[in-house]
Length: 395
Image (cartoon, rainbow, N blue to C red; front, side, top):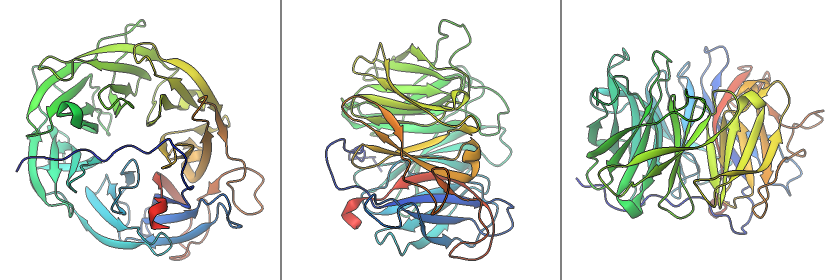
């Protein structure tokens, strides 16, 4: 069955009504009680701004809640993975204050442990599965699923001539070029990887495995992490866990290549978001979010920076539908059990912490997940990870 249709478009950067909720995929800190989805009040006009509205337990503990959709899908159904267990959970969030669990599934076939998903406009879903089997001994795959998670097709990512250790991590869909880009980084950190892979969107056949070249230090390009399509709908930049940024060239040919275009400080740079002409990147070793102006993708320049507390190492970020707010979660230090909001000026790239988004009576910004009780019970502290804003259409 051919993969037809386009990818779901990125969040708008034009004016719109503010998203009123943030959904946070959360694990029980002790791994004994159920993992759950938390709903936070993110309406700036609300008298309970920053409150935990409700939670929904999934009747499964220790799944290692990890990534969700990178933004709330148009159909109002959020996918969230329990990476350790290999489960995917589907949440109906069309009524944000009354979330429903539609079900959970494990992808059919030999490939396991889903990491990231990308929606197509026809309702189908592309996903990266890290490995064949559970032993992390063989490469995973790029797979196509229907809207309920049934496997339609799988394309093996193994390409030993290009890189002996490939573990599909994240992905970006480029409908204008009939391409999908996947990255490779091992969640278990068994071995490093150095490649991205380019696939045809129409049939998921592999076009090329591209090794990232070193940059000025000589040791760049390790563990490609997150590809994103820029505002032109054709250009793809890729971040790495060695905190580098690469531009992919000639994506519409059978011989794509990659060029180093920017380096951030430190290691473990994780999720970015694209907002208009800005690429906003988590830089945990600098406790920061950094906004780059990528109007010229070959020469990004810093336009804004938000430096958090010295104990904060941001990991996950997601953009609101209006393109002016960013949710921050899933990091190290105090961010392991806290969710923050930041603002982005779409005209300048300036970033700022939303000081109003906090627990009632708290002395510091943010919503703490280090608490005794939740709507679903007194299950104690929890660890947030994937988080997305709601869509105003459902509010």
